[in-house]
Length: 480
Image (cartoon, rainbow, N blue to C red; front, side, top):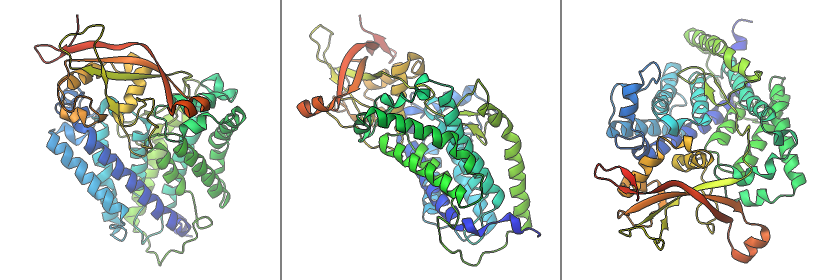
């Protein structure tokens, strides 16, 4: 028998597709970082990295930026990550030696790890840990002229199981509406960032919404166990997950979460569903086999707490038990909000505030704003500020650290901050006052849509941040 069990050429094609898709997600992640870091975590950003690393030691936030930080250095790190990821998408490293394959795939993982660990609240989403956990396993999958190692394929199945089953369990333990199948009466309207088809999904008949919820439970609570059965049954289970994730892609914007889940599920497809014949494949060297087995043992040991969490009454979601995000817990929407609120930022260039002051609204790229504007398709790109403003509409505690600094940046007409917006009503000039108001949003009904052409109806609910202007020290102060 020897080492015949160690690799499986039936997964040669799925390994290549998986690697291409993962590299594309890495590329998007690094481009997102490049486009947004100066305003969010740059040296003069809302939550600056230098301030963060001054109080968070390396052992709590391992990152190359613990050693040195400047905006130029951050940009260089992100550019290197993007260029390596782009080369991996193109397959430029497919036929390198095994050791070189490990090194090349380790580079984006180390660089993105460095970004996430200093990203603070802007990088606190579950798909960041998911990308890092998946990326770590991808380091050891080997080049194209070698069959993929079976232990790594099993670890990817274990990751996919935890991802889907964890999401299913958090729902069953969460809102009652998941158990009575009514959560999707609201979800398409109240999700963080609706997409261009979300209005139509929201207006599906209620019996179809119940079927949606039932299908979600089946896919997340039953199908994951089928992943561990023989092929082609396991591949069919993965294909069912891919179809349900495509449904989520069509119904909303969830960054790269759904595309990355699809990517992981692709690794479970063998030659029955991806019938491509591999070329003559090389035998893996002994040192590589030992490394793979050591990594497998490490992941199994670190899986104890995430596995226990799956079956715990106090289940937590989107949590990392180790600083390198090697094995994490996942889940989303254990609770579903039934009413949508939005934080709307406004400014004026009038010298004094009066009852007749004219306020002008800042426009955002993804979050709802102008009721006439149709929701946009953003994912797999990620608009971090837009997402956090949705959380701010749920509770002010999500914005305590950055909403006031955001107002100060708008009052100063900070160029990096304005680049995060779709529309600046002052065309780069400084307003005299800025305020944030809370609005209730709901989708228009079909009749309202025919009559007005609007996608949303909104009603003011009160202030989220009082009107303020810049004080002598450059910080925003409330108006009298």
